[in-house]
Length: 117
Image 1 (cartoon, rainbow, N blue to C red):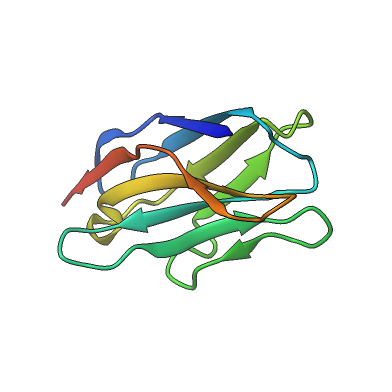
Image 2: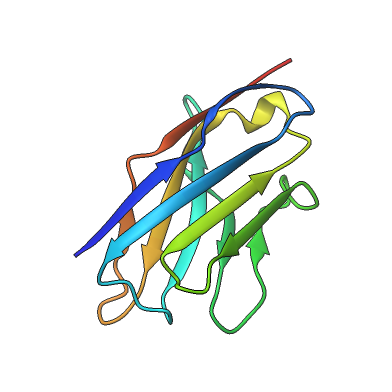
């Protein structure tokens, strides 16, 4: 079993910054992949950024150049540094893990990010 707990969300003005954290516990493998997804009101959940073991990170076009994803050396903590925030970044942000043996998706409970104009 895998448990994911997000923190760091909040209310910020446009142009501001937030740093999200995800604490992972349980059967976490360093070879597994982790990422941040987000879901705005009335919209489907979408990928914001993902980090892989053997390749560079992947970012949604809408956040490239503004968001930076990172994972610590233990593999149990995931971060999302969000700069130059825009009102359209307002969403619930979810931490995601996929790893061996079955590569199913695990999700955290989400953390709300609200960007005011």
